[in-house]
Amino acid sequence: MLESIALNIVDGPLNLWIQSTYWLWPILEITHFIGLSLLLGGLIVIDLRMAGHFRAFNVIATHKLLPVVFLGFALNLFTGVLFFCGDPLRYSVNIGFQIKMVLVAFAGLNALLYYWKINPIIHTWNLAAGSPPIAKAVAYASLITWTGVLLCGRLIPYVGTG
Image 1 (cartoon, rainbow, N blue to C red):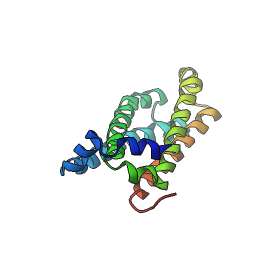
Image 2: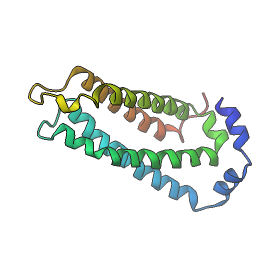
Image 3: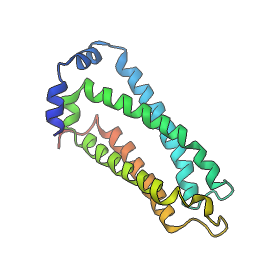
Image 4: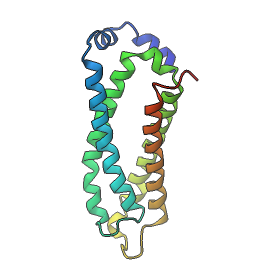
């Protein structure tokens, strides 16, 4: 599926523009790194608190970092799409990229689980009793999944095709 998308993109105007603009790729890399820092920086605080760590922090107050997390994700989505459009034949067959995309999809499902199950009850938590098991599971799944996304993203230049 990714290969058919890649074949439709290659030699298109966006692909040619990205490849011919020598300064664009480094700017995309820097922006992608900033987005990753915002995304993971915010999620680490939110998820560790939601899992029951850092009890000195108010669990609801940590969720005020969500706009920062969303901004980071938006930057990564935008730059990631441009990376794919800039070199679609390399990314579409790269096992690191493929695993990364599966992990991002899993992270999205985990975020939906948070939204449906945890967000409605977070204001009712007994903070002295600790975090509910569902919150711990979602928090640790988020941390593990996004760490996997980070690692697979770093492996893309070093691993080949599936």
